[in-house]
Amino acid sequence: MEKETIEVGIIGLGDMGRLYGLSFLAAGWKRVNVCDIPSRYEQLREELAGTGLNVLPDGYSVSRRSDFIVYSVEAANIDRVVGMYGPGTKLGATVCGQTSVKEPEIRAFEKYLPPDVNIVTCHSMHGPRVNPKNQPLVVIRHRSDQESFDRAVRILNSLQSDIVYLNYLDHDRITADTQVATHLAFLSMGTAWKVHKVYPWENPSYVGGIENVKTLMTLRIYSNKWHVYAGLAILNPSARPQVRQYANSVSELFKLMIQEKEEEFRKRVKAAAAFVFGNADRQALLLSDDVLDQFSLSAIPRAQRKPNSHLSLLAVVDCWHALEPSPYDHLICQTPPFRMLLGLTEYLFLEPGSLDDAINAALYNREIRSDDCEFYTATRGWVECIELGSMEGYEKRFTETAAFFEDRLVQGAKASAKLIETLAGTRGST
Image (cartoon, rainbow, N blue to C red; front, top):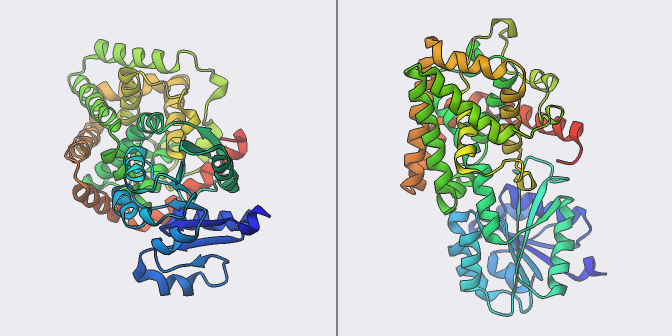
């Protein structure tokens, strides 16, 4: 009876808003009201005819009649949109947000929502092209009576995700620890390849298991919308230490490499390895030899691969060591890119001979110095953009790099989705 009478609302019908709306319908919630910007009303009515979604003219229409309302809008716009529609929220309704940064979202809810409105917010730790089943879903009870909270959880269970309960401050801290260095590493790889005018699948330095996954995850990120990553990096106060430390790790390791200070370099890398992987079980690797070699965009035989320093991955582990967040403690809020990055670092540091090969290449293979120099420069550029808080600069850097890979973005996104599904199938719920 509840699913027949309760009205669920979604304000913002981008990719994630649609995923939520269709998931709610599939789970049996009969009344799902949706909207986007008013100028798209007629287009959406035609586009979504027959889906069961009730398209309304604007967020005010959704707010006035819905018992559970999800704001699925960009983090940078959450204050403006809640300011427009929040005061008109139905008496006793529950409001939820789907932004990746919760501090500005909660601030907007507290500022604009009537005091009789409940706040139970959430964050799906994946993108719209990933099946939400068994993926982590953070649920935050900020201001709610028990009945409304229980109903919100029943509605969100429609996604079939693995729910993790946090407060909004812990959410922002953990997502900064897991996602910021992850995105920065892959973003910088892409920009370095663009500036160097190198497609990794055409270069022998980027052939083989680790390189396959690095390439696919970079393409996956650049196939998505820039604002998803910009909001997390720029609007999350907990992100700045991660950004600075990753840049410092890249810089300091690169300086040791070009000076060929072997003893100091090895000592630093091994210390980071001991901190992060000291208790790791070799059998618990997130990636395996078989998985790493299944996914490749390159026609170059593996036998022709050249050594690689893997500066990007060495710097990630050095960053984790410096800031001391254990990546394994944060798997409760893992995203597919973070899971891939952790798997790559595990493979590099724990596969026999792999780390020593990377260290030797970093110190003595001068053929790859230009690639590492471009990566170092790209990282610095991204960090400067983030620390300036420039959404416009972030968008420009992102879209220019995405344009360089345009012909392979769809293929890379599909292949990376298959990789993610393969890992989920081999490891169960992840």
